[in-house]
Amino acid sequence: AMESGGGAADAFPGRSTAAGKRKLGGRIGHHGTGTPTVLTAYASKAGVDAAQLNAIAAAYMPVNGYEIAKSEKSKQRARGIYVHGIQYGEVKPDAFAELLSWMTPRSGENFLDIGSGTGKAVLTAAALYPLGSATGIEIQPALHEAALRARERLLGMTELRVPSDQIRLELGDALTQPWHAEADLVFCTPTCFTPEMVEALCQGVDKLPIGARLAVGHRGDDAH
Image 1 (cartoon, rainbow, N blue to C red):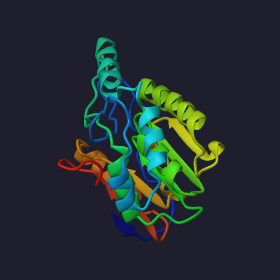
Image 2: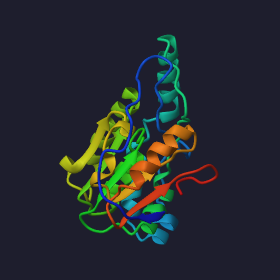
Image 3: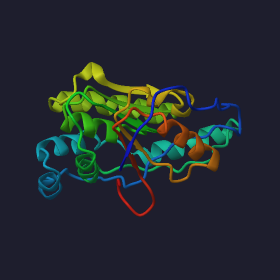
C-alpha cells in the first residue's frame, strides 16, 4: 500500500469494446469451498470481527467466480471478442481483511475496487469498516451479476458497517471513468495488465486526493 497526493481530473483514455479489443481488470487469490470456519487467527491479527468474515464466506458458498469467468470468456470468443491483459482471480476475505488493516481505513472514507469481479473485496470492506461508501467496478456482466447476488445474501445474514445504499457494485469499464476523484482507499490487481493499461492506471493514481491509499495486488500473494 502506498499513500498518494494529487488533485482530481479525468484520466483514462477511452477503450474500444469492439471484438478483439476489450481489456479487463482481474483479481488474484483462490476460490474456497466447503463449510465456513471461524477465521480467528486472521481476525485477531487484523483486529476485525471473525463473525463478519464467516458471513462473507457463507455468502460466497454458491459462487465459483473462476467458472463464471471461464464461461464468460468462452461466450465472448464465440462472438469474436478476444480479451487481452487480464487473468481472473479472487481475494480471500481473511487475507484481504489484513490488507485493509494496513491501509488504516478511517470512518467515512470511500473504498474502491477496480475490476471487482464477484465483489469479495468490496463486501469485505463494507462488512468490516464504517466507510462512507464501498464501490466495485466490474466489466464482465456475469461476474457483476454474481456480485449483486452475493451482496443480497450477505445483507440477509448480517448487518454491514456501510449502509446498503452506499455499497455500490457497478457494471462498466473502470479505466474509462474518473474513478480517482473521490476514492480514499483503492484496490487493484494489474497482474496481467498490458503496459497501456498500467500507464492508464498510473495516470489515475497521480490524480488521487491527497492522503489516499492504494493497494496493488501481484503474483505470489493472496491479497497484498
